[in-house]
Picture 1 (cartoon, rainbow, N blue to C red):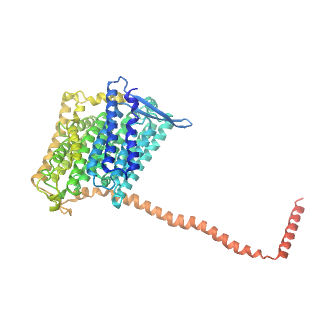
Picture 2 (tube, rainbow, N blue to C red):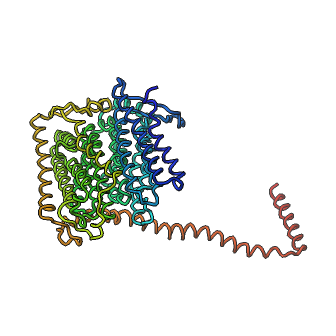
Picture 3 (tube, one colour):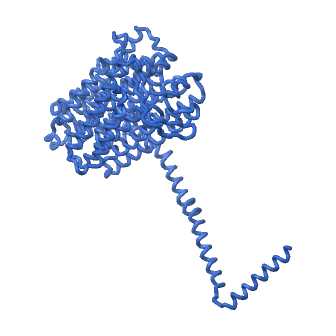
Length: 637
């Protein structure tokens, strides 16, 4: 038996951890719960590494691992089976590897929390569902994992549910995800009615025989994209993600780095041939992606909550991934998923380290001067900031450059907006870094007295992620820079059909060099502007917004998008529900039911008078009845 045949153990380990910790969370000491939660994910990671190397050495690149027949209904047959190929193998490494580091980090970060055991059981369940999502060999199993991570995100975002605003943020995430999920579900129904199956191995070869622009394919891909916009926080379903900061910081890292928010990108990458044959859908994806990247970036540049900056940064980076998908750069988009997992997990965990040292303070206006007190956190977050800004040779440069090159090849306008977004990214990330770590401390004396570096359980994951953020880009060094793009070669079996139809880059080497130079110059310029304003001139945003112009106030208030949604969607729906409650439910339905009850009561009051108790009257009525029956019979002869 090969190691790949044991792939079912990868999701089973975290599921077992969830059950054990969940059942005995009130019995186990915190150390035991943390050990079990971390070890189960570590075992999954170790097995994922073994699967990856066996797959790399194998001549066969796609393995179907059937476990049992699950659903049989008419023509619908859904086996419970897993698919192991280069795409799912890499996702296994990302989910379990980053997941393990976040588990280790959480043992220190959540040490004083009363719900420690429950928290780790939720983390394990989240990892289980995410692994189910990426391993499923058909859309139904993918959808189970899809819904499962949605459920776990609700539990984790609202973990401190006694705070009503946190509970509301969890409900908001849950409801907005359901909107997208409905599109995904209808898309799966349409896939079955069109292809007679939901198995990837059956659907994709059939789809490859269809003509590009087929209306059914366009409809299917639009529906799938609607699902992706919810899970991966794209316009218009993106406002749940910044509010998801209500959860503990390790949750933010888990949801926003390697797992839930990349599910939409994974689903589109997995279904790449369907989208390649739907050029209209790809255009929509590219436009929505770049618009989301710009919108979120312009909001991030004025935020003062360190986690909100990173949240809008995540929305913006997801927009870049969708831009890559939309211009046919499937490898580039997934490359950015990979590098983003490294530096965004690093940045969120670094922010958690800062918040931990600052006694739960998240406002950057009350930080400053922390690099002397938190040297490891500062250095690692500096690495993450350089990586996300797209400055070489750190990881973000290679993945972002690949997306921008394909965007330029596809549309110069998309490339211009992509570069502008990259410039904003560099500016708001270095702004965050300088406000947090440079100049003098702006917090209270009590906070300054308690400033200290985080424990090793928190700093070691930061160091590991910083190393990955620094060197991760070398997995995809392009040929123009002397590399052979290992990632593109490894993923080529998954994207083969799409690559054949779309072709590769048609840019001259000189053009590619120019594009690299422009993006790096834009990032360095933005970083320098941030340095001058927030480090050299020590500018600190005012709490009352007095120093903000009209555009800055719009940005700081997130363009009032939540308020607009509340005005045009929430309030009309509340008014409609109020109308149905007061008029339809209470007046009409309750009126009919209660009216029938009253009519029965009133009628019985009259009819009961006939029950006099007089036997002579009863005999008379009997005789009258018999006579009436005889007369009726006589006249009907």
